[in-house]
Length: 279
Image (cartoon, rainbow, N blue to C red; front, side):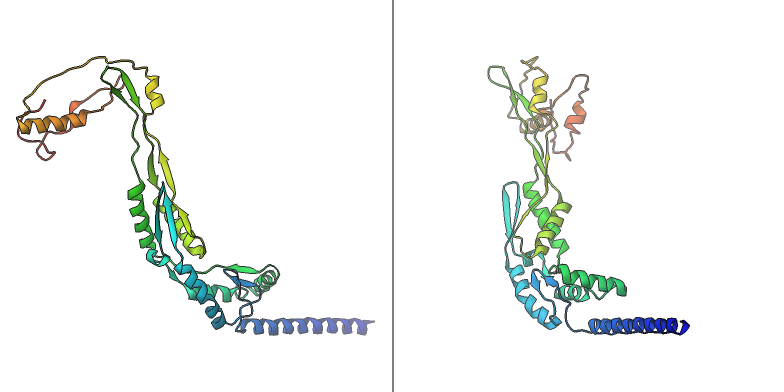
């Protein structure tokens, strides 16, 4: 009985050793193989069992198509067209090949076998890799932002010729989020097939809205004042014009203190005033 048990143990050890040898041989064959593992796809192209030089040849037309496309960038009714190369994008064939080659060849032996099994069953997609011109992308989005961004305009009150109060509605402003827009543009460029990118733009509402002005229930002119000066005195006229433009549409809320000096600022030659009087 003891002899029989020893034989079973020896057989078991032999099978286990044979298994280890088989795994080691298989692992060596896979690791030293010149082909990409089955189930690997690059941008939808099946490159499994291809050698690296074959993969490179197959990817060349894909890169050419990706870099020849037209990228349309949109924002607030405006749009611009660029080629990826104009945006500083270049192919990164080496990175793409390396990523495809490394599938199932990194990590512990258990991790490698698990990845190989999953790749063969479900396939493993690898995107085309590109080198991004970070500064060019950022500068491009900033230039577009200058054409899009607007400050909001507050609603305001005007008095018509009949001394009636007219409320002019405000307007929303716009601010382009440079960082988020650049990241979204990079996603479009890295996709290899997307053609359009919508910039990330935030609407900036005015501080004072038409609804708020209406809530004040202003229904007429409270007071008015007129004064006269000689327009032939050009320097003084220019000074009055500068001061008046700073005071125009100034809103003084209840309990608020109005300061002429704070609103108009220093009346100096540096500020544009001339040697003359000013009201």
